[in-house]
Length: 571
Ligand code: ADP
Image (cartoon, rainbow, N blue to C red; front, side, top):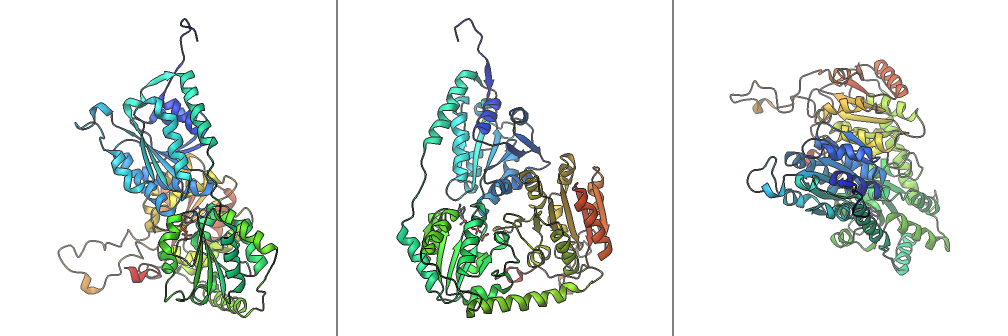
């Protein structure tokens, strides 16, 4: 422009919004306030859908799950200081689950830092233990590069959380629009040019195939890393062409349908206890898989680990490690098998043993499930919910599950038929994720209904977000298993009830028969209170067909279920 034409200026808020949009980000979760309100408004004006929450913790859980479900980093926006600290719940959850997300926080004015500014905190230091990368933009000209770096890092290698710090003085800076556009174009160009392909030698693939071919009792374990990699097609091909039984981890459920004839879910102890070769795809040999050690696993089992993270392979020291994207590695394995196929077949003793054990265990559980127990235990309502969900067919709803007994029993009873349709407390056993996950799922998969099956304790962490459900009219049905507290209210032994505060409610108790369904009614959503099979069936049928925000308060016998669910040995 010549010196006579006034230049159009844009501020940091606009430049952040433009940079996000240029990277392909079109959703953001968060809580507004000083100094980021304008950033949220600008992002919306640039085509980014902003979902405004009540609490950064919930919004952070939403951003983490959105990263997993959409395959693109979920974005959390928070205010400075306390907002950033609340948001860490979400970012640490993303790190623990290996999901891509970024947290963007405002921070105090750089010149006032160190003398007690409003919401002052050294946020870069605070987030370090919970993030892969933390970047502070000290000037508006650093914005495009900073935004691209955190987004790129969150999604590369093992996914995780990254942090972008925007001081309030930087948020108030402006530069000519033409300069901003040039900066942005240059950054986008340099990121697009990078080549990140790591190639896996074919000899490693041959070794893996040879191990599977010569095993006596092979097993394929698939985890949420395989689900994140969208590996369902090559996984199905591998399982069905070789006839090898498979075992999904809790969130790996649905990569192949739970009802598949080679599913070993209901024969888990036998499958992991007796297999001699285990191909583990996108799942860590951590507590959830008993560290891959005896007594749950045989001491001679040969693990073939497929993981995007080289450190993970180094940590576990498997018999064979294949570093790479799960989908790509499985495709390579299938290609190698194609030239010289093999199949264990239904009559193979191992396949037959797993099938028999599965059938026996399923029958045993069905006997328990068939009974209509009132007051409700966990099994009866879970069966009714399972059948109602199955009745919906495809697209299957996204199921969100948390709580001790509610999640454990739900995992065994509820049936997953499609990939990435189960979100639960995950690697970290994080409670309180439910409402955030529901909102993320509804935003990520608008064609699917979202059904949460939660304990009353899990629900309570972020129950106010039912207002968010109503405000955005999301198709989410939250079913609360209400047994009056953590693990079901007061379960203390007589010797634990003494001292000056012995008449206080037990640390595990909530108000008995709390009216959780009335919370959503306060905002214009639909609430149901149910205590019998007929009432529950009717509430499910009504709310599933309405596809509107609803809370179903299911009264459960406080003495049903166990303390700590199935993790009593950890308590
Ligand atoms: P689960 O909870 O299902 O057992 P984990 O979260 O323990 O699963 O493990 C998931 C693993 O998947 C992590 O080690 C992560 O590094 C890995 N992973 C993430 N993305 C990919 C990918 N695209 N391909 C292969 N592995 C991946």
